[in-house]
Image 1 (tube, each protein chain N blue to C red):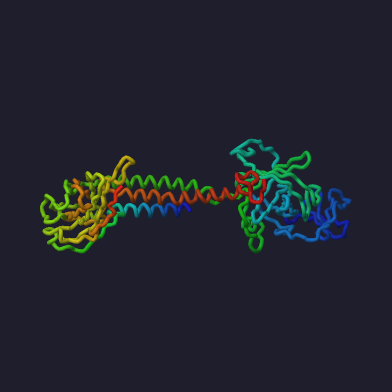
Image 2 (image 1 turned 90 degrees about the vertical axis):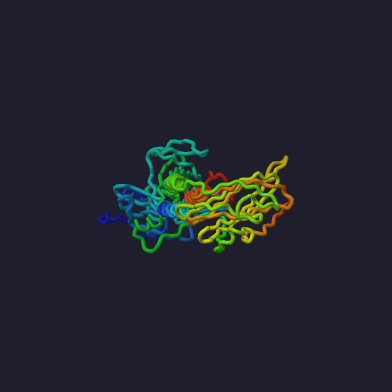
Length: 432
Length: 60
């Protein structure tokens, strides 16, 4: 391609040279000196339109720059700025025309730092409906309707394989299936379909080997792929596997922590009456000693009472008979009920953490409101019980990463569709 | 991202296993001082750190 010489013509308006790189394909060309649009389809070059504007636009990628896309080298031969006006508001994007003598024409569009490599399609898509929106089925992909507009060419440079003028308008419609976009451009009696693939500025800069860095990205573009798209599925898949491991841990600890009963007894508490047990000269008493075996592990104390519209508070101390080391804790049990319902529970339990093995006894000191009747209660100590609270906490904490990525993808998609003419909520600034 | 999640999950499940094996608990238990042997003979002499319990007894 480097050996091919560009053809040159003289501008009939200013006399300046106009290079043609598209060979016989070029139907119109723009004089780089006076910006007149010339009819280059015949040897007698004629002026199609002179430039009346005041400002000139410098393309980010200069005409004549060559870059490699999909294994083929393309040269930038044309540039146009297209504008959409919606009442008081207007926006524009840049379009570059790329040419390869063997592959033909391709387009590169840029809007707010978002790039698309565009190929004109010859097959027609099939009209359908999906998710409550108009859609197109093309090449086994479903494209959802995104927006429709009338775009006008407001600035041109280089050459083009059609006769163009500034002010030319086409009715455009975009359908998206990120990272692809299917677009139609309709003029009177003619519809052209093209398919675009989203590219980053870095990819474009690399393809053209351009100096510096690409323009910064603003907002989310219609067919911009979400960086969370594949992450969401894989994070939920990982979540399932981690939960399988969590379930295995639950079964493992149900097996190795069976919760063997180390002590169990029945008592009756009545104010001012010494308990009918050994080792007591007050309302507080101590139980007989019992053995806690195995590794340093937890102990669960369960309290079962026959309370009825009353409360009882227990001061407990689990005391090592040999070392005197004690674990001090208290638990309230209260249960009230009337015709409106009930409040509280007759039973309570507590898990005492990391208790070393050894011979222990329990000091029990119950308290009730003055004048209360007696309460009968059972105390049961179980060694080495599975603490399901940790498993529950692990389950909740494992949900955070997939929930976060799902939320981020949802936010990304919401931001994408806010810009759509088919948005669930009309975009800001829309009155109707 | 997924590698980080796997790492996070492995650490979390590892901590859960250690917590279960070591018998950790969310319960508030005060591991107290070493007590004299006389407590067993005179339980009332022991002052629990949870003693002096006062409660609103208005009831339901």
